[in-house]
Length: 361
Ligand SMILES: NC(=O)C1=CN([C@@H]2O[C@H](COP(=O)(O)OP(=O)(O)OC[C@H]3O[C@@H](n4cnc5c(N)ncnc54)[C@H](OP(=O)(O)O)[C@@H]3O)[C@@H](O)[C@H]2O)C=CC1
Ligand SMILES: [Mg+2]
Image 1: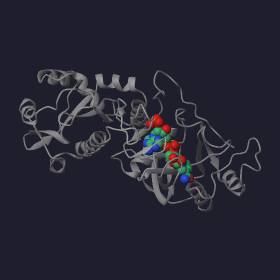
Image 2: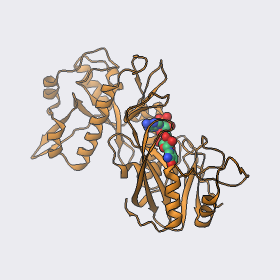
Image 3: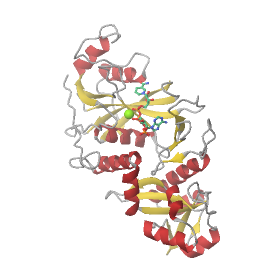
Image 4: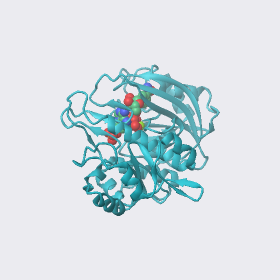
């Protein structure tokens, strides 16, 4: 098995950022801020904040164009102080992205009830005078903004709305607590973790299905398989990951591959979907993807995966013929997911048609 475990070099942050494309380093930086409250708090110091009021983004008009102004943490603290607000309200902010230079972007709603500050929400009219702008209905704002701001503010509004609607645990009734980035909420009493697309973890039979992308990456002759420590010993599968709120399936596929193995996709092609019940209801959306030839060096995200590697067509075809790993466990052999799993279907499709034609990612 030509297993190449790209060992992530653990420096201060999760990974050293050399040799990775801008897209991959940006994706991994955001992953780190979602995982590490201290890192996210630190990023707020040099970050930029977009302001909302009751889910309407602040726009300012300059010449004939509208733009969404950004405020530094210091400017925000001064603004809140001017309106007699404590800076606790900044804890309601959510991470919505970052620049190529890793300047983190946050969104903060000054009109929704705050779960971090006892002060009432700030008056819209007074804020607009002070900020020389107007809090504009997002659907209207989309016609006035450039694509980048429109997409960012749409994600921001979805995340702010989700947090506003998930202040309490549906099992214990207790207030839930947001992590600094706002990528999840946790109930300290029931320990349930809520994600901005579906409740999960300690199971509440969720009526929702969390969308999950699963991707078999190929470099033209080999395919990339990975394993988590929770997998049965020796079992490898395709890369999978939950979609984040506000992102398209294509964006989720590219992000998950960048986060988990540090590769940038060139092309991808939809294959099939499947309802999957473990550990909670997920809608698995499967696709084939390819990387640019020569850009195949894996850097494993050891916070997510135990190992990952490139496997030859013959190795995978042989593994597909193996039956149940639990009856013929042999050391040094790798196994594939059961026939029922869409991962198995993806891998079988690739073995039968290694050149699954893919579309630009
Ligand atoms: N049918 C099939 O063939 C296959 C199905 N799967 C399924 O796909 C799903 C996703 O795979 P996995 O690689 O674990 O996903 P991810 O790569 O997204 O990693 C899981 C992590 O994502 C975070 N997360 C974000 N949203 C959710 C959510 N709604 N529920 C749970 N965790 C969330 C959690 O991190 P944190 O705790 O840090 O917030 C969690 O530890 C799994 O449920 C798995 O069972 C996987 C492979 C094959
Ligand atoms: Mg995953």
